Amino acid sequence: MSVFANLVEQLAELLQPLFHTSAAAAAIVVFTALVRLLVHPLSRAAARGQRARAALQPKVAELRKKHAKNPEKLQKAVLELHAEEKVSPLSGCLPSLLQLPAFFLLYHLFSNSTIGGEGNGLLTHQLYAAPLGGRWADALGDGGVFGGAGLVYLALFAVVAAVATFNYVRTKRTAAAGGALPVGDEGGGEQVPGLAAVGRIMPFMSYLTIITVAVVPLAAALYVVTSTTWSAVERAVLYR
Image (cartoon, rainbow, N blue to C red):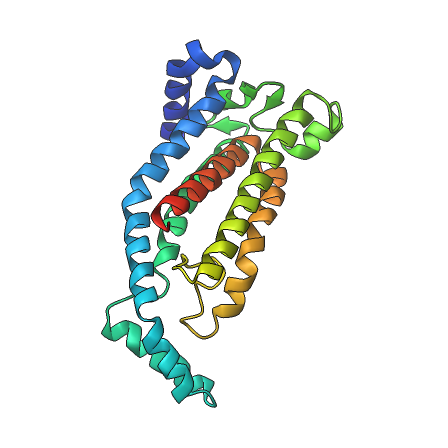
């Protein structure tokens, strides 16, 4: 963890002339972008996989008619079809899973008062008036909703809500047009029985990111907001 802390500190020093007291927050945004760049090839592969799954829809429709009264046989037949065509129905989940270690690393880094037996200097950094190690509850107790730190969180909540709304509208339009959707978007799980219900719920899950932003340290919240925004833009491009 100390190596990662040094990385954040060094990035903050490089960005300090531009962002001053918010340099560490900018460093976290840059770090998030680097992580997303690393997994971008997997995201592109997931998009190709989704297009392949979309191409199988006519065959899946035939299987639904053939096994309409036997859900177990339908599920088995659909999975066998994906295996024959060498298409993974869950390949789109891999990019998200590979980002979790980076998120948890930031979470623990800004939740601990010491690193390697020494004081955690990163906790002294702020995003404007909000400490990077603080949470929304701390902001509410120090100035309230419209205090200096509270306004930082309101801005983050607004970004998350805007991204979630963008995802929801894009998903609805794509589904109405009959286009291919990534796994996790509405309709993306229809080819695999049992995932359809999840697909209907997922467009609303983006709004729950607001809860995550509220309860984790601000540094981890910045990672979530940046990564979520990146995902929205990336999916709009890859699945257009």
